[in-house]
Length: 166
Length: 166
Figure 1 (cartoon, each protein chain N blue to C red):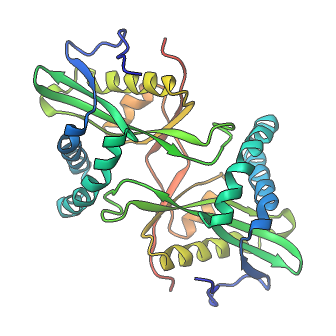
Figure 2 (spheres, helix red, strand yellow; figure 1 turned 90 degrees about the horizontal axis):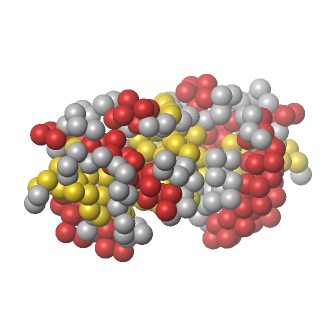
Figure 3 (cartoon, one colour; figure 1 turned 60 degrees about the vertical axis):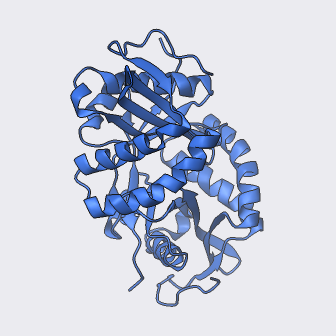
């Protein structure tokens, strides 16, 4: 499970697996990603306060996994992956989990070189190795065309903020 | 947590909580719902084979909860609810879970009386009591307008079948 597929073009960067000391990098990427998507900075600081201690044990025991693309000592982009519990479903009738892709982030200086696509191909290969047959993600507006080009399509998910019954 | 809110109109039916002996009812509802949504019967039989043993321990320990509307001894409609683990997110920055609504089903003879809406209001009240601030679901085409009328809106979720890297 530790091999990086050789056939993906990482634009001369080195791919490696996420490690426990990437905790702050992932927190920064998540915050930056949602900030660029137009979310409120105050809300994001509160989120990170809760996301960091949520992530730490999961990064430590491998429930949160993924990859970083390195330019020498400099992280250029990263992707997070999880195998989430899900009821057996027509899209995965004999499996009670699905893959989840999150916190896909390319540092501003490394954009428009196909790094997000390369990371998504790594995600496919990783899910495949783990025998996960179906995966989901939540796309930002800028991410959507990248994912569509790789075969991802919108679902019928709906959401609601829960408020006291009137 | 065992009270049924009195202000919801159940069209003269009795609302009660799901119990362990509703296992087969829930399995039948899930299969029927996906069949009506156009899924393949063979795939659904396979799904149910795996969904039943997945559901049983969760219904027993309360990880899967929800309600049934009874017409005397006859179940007329039901809804499933779960509190699913989720990373703290801008829509629930200090919570590491979200509500999930599934297997909403109204028996054909009981449709067009607002029972799905009544069940969704019960879901809101239940999530609220459990202090869950954000919830998601996956809508069928017929369900979508019902959910929209109650304040649910589409998300940016995308999905992909994972296949070996070429």
